[in-house]
Length: 153
Image 1 (cartoon, rainbow, N blue to C red):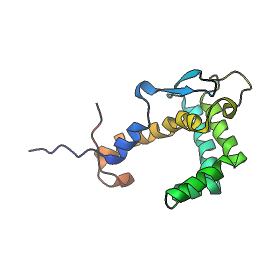
Image 2 (cartoon, one colour; image 1 turned 60 degrees about the horizontal axis):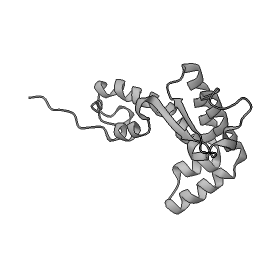
Image 3 (cartoon, rainbow, N blue to C red; image 1 turned 120 degrees about the vertical axis):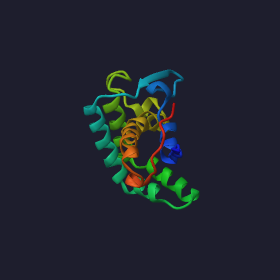
Image 4 (cartoon, helix red, strand yellow; image 1 turned 90 degrees about the horizontal axis):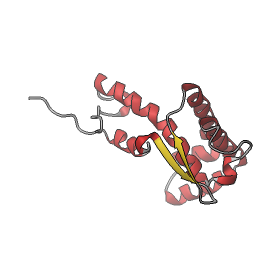
């Protein structure tokens, strides 16, 4: 009698971060809608990953990730918003991923809210993690600190 593996909670959370159909829908501050394909080339993924890594190394962002309670998180987010270099990395990641999404020379931070920029970048980082879980899951429990999951339909 074979058992069906329990759903992987990490996979379930990650799946919520990838938009259905691999298209993220953003709204500009002017109310215009942008539909962006979150399936990008490996070269673009590398540039986005490097910009994101630089962003994550910033002390204010690292503090948010390691952070304490919700009040601390709020303070860290305010700190991030005030960190021009971190915001430049966020914009660089967006432009690397979606070079044709905005008119040439337009800074995404001038036409999109911070949360919209993050919403566009997050799936690009999560998709490779999901693929890794697909590969690692059948190989054994405990690798990557998770149990094998069943693919969602």
